[in-house]
Image (tube, rainbow, N blue to C red; front, side, top):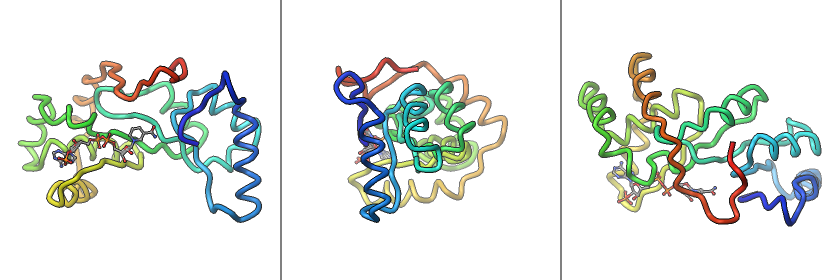
Length: 170
Ligand SMILES: NC(=O)c1ccc[n+]([C@@H]2O[C@H](COP(=O)([O-])OP(=O)(O)OC[C@H]3O[C@@H](n4cnc5c(N)ncnc54)[C@H](OP(=O)(O)O)[C@@H]3O)[C@@H](O)[C@H]2O)c1
């Protein structure tokens, strides 16, 4: 479910429909996206937490989405971090470049490792083979706990995917 539209369709009605599709073996998993804490709670109440494979939301160093992340972790729902590079904006951030230089990796790899080390599934996109390969190699990066703490300071609630039909974010 790509975007919730709670004013038009109650969450319960479509998560129940998705659960029926799963029951009928039309899909192996069902996931939601851009769901707030209260919308995720409504989905859990409707079909049970075990039915929700992931909530795919915008998360990157400039938008750390801590309230939602904490809630999803507490519920055991996998977080999928979309726009993990803030559409390229993280690449020119001095602290990220400094950490990258220290590990002899790229700024993109620092941002991706920051997400991966918090247990998020990350889905960066690229039109370039070289960047795709570099992004995949972020799986092998190990940022130090000091790096992770430093990166926490970059949170500035900068949401990039914010269309006019967005819910009121947490
Ligand atoms: N569920 C939702 O509502 C939702 C909303 C938005 C996005 N998404 C999904 O999230 C995924 C990623 O989002 P996104 O593409 O908007 O943002 P993103 O992955 O944060 O950033 C993509 C940008 O970063 C550049 N890039 C990627 N890897 C790079 C590297 N190693 N070095 C330098 N530049 C690099 C790309 O340019 P190049 O092509 O030049 O590499 C592109 O300009 C997509 O699959 C998208 O569909 C989901």
